[in-house]
Image 1: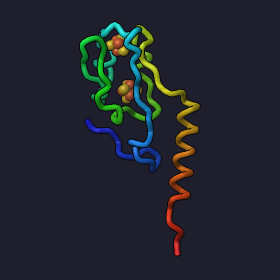
Image 2: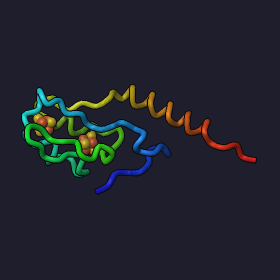
Image 3: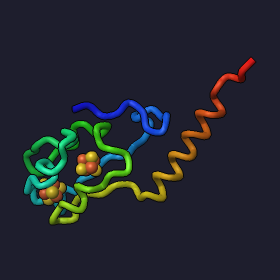
Image 4: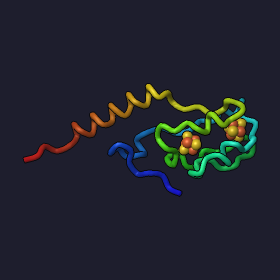
Length: 99
Ligand code: SF4
Ligand code: SF4
């Protein structure tokens, strides 16, 4: 399954929203891999690898709640909102004027 190419009109690759795994906390239990249907994670030797970060649904952090070790983190929702506002403003400013 591939991720969306845009979110609120913003190219998905400009939005750094994806899970980050703390290898010091991860026990490699596999719960996150089993939970997420978007093929974001892949099994790894000592912890899963985030192989398709852009498949992660912007604003979703459900796998972090599934992790029994608290090893998964994301940027805060506040940071995400501020980033989206900034990117949308940049896009509006970059649009050519209608003649
Ligand atoms: S659910 Fe948490 S502890 Fe389990 S493999 Fe994923 S990140 Fe590691
Ligand atoms: S936040 Fe949601 S979409 Fe993203 S990896 Fe976790 S479960 Fe999958």
